[in-house]
Length: 246
Picture 1 (cartoon, rainbow, N blue to C red):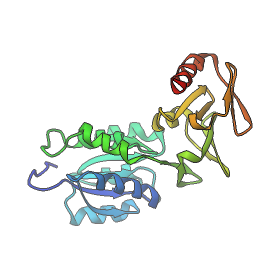
Picture 2 (picture 1 turned 135 degrees about the vertical axis):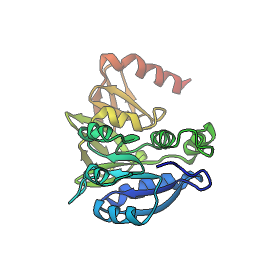
Picture 3 (picture 1 turned 90 degrees about the vertical axis):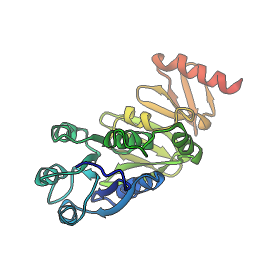
């Protein structure tokens, strides 16, 4: 579908999880050059909506009940620009085989969302992944992330995290009052949290810098819990701690 430069690109969000739709809606609202025209909680409703409305960008979850997002895309003769959103890496190849513009893995970072939008709108005169946009997002203070836990997108307050522990294909996120278990790798978590606030000290542990009570060359103490420092991560950790002291 060719974009009409006389109007704002029209967006449709399709996801069976309300919190996941909330994230995309919030991101779209941050960009004045985009126009959200609808939301659907399943692919069947989206199919009906697309028959009656022109859409420029479709933010489409893949794994949904009754009809997959990939199946919806295959059923549309002239699909709009599609950006897949999903919590499952294994669906990435299916998305790219269908000529999707991009594939966003949940939890979705705002900067990654912007890059996907730029791919969908190449050369569009109002679309700028500018430093001003990125700076405003940083200044606004991303104080939480959404993670898929027990089939829900759960909001985790970053300042409440005590430490993050890897458990093979899962991560355990320990907060002030509980432990959250989500199916995700520790590396993917590391990619979405602020490197100025968190540091990886071991292949199995990430810790918030402001929660460190004491440390040696072998371990870090947080909330009376001692966590090991891996040899590979030691030098980087020490440099960060020294810079905070100075």
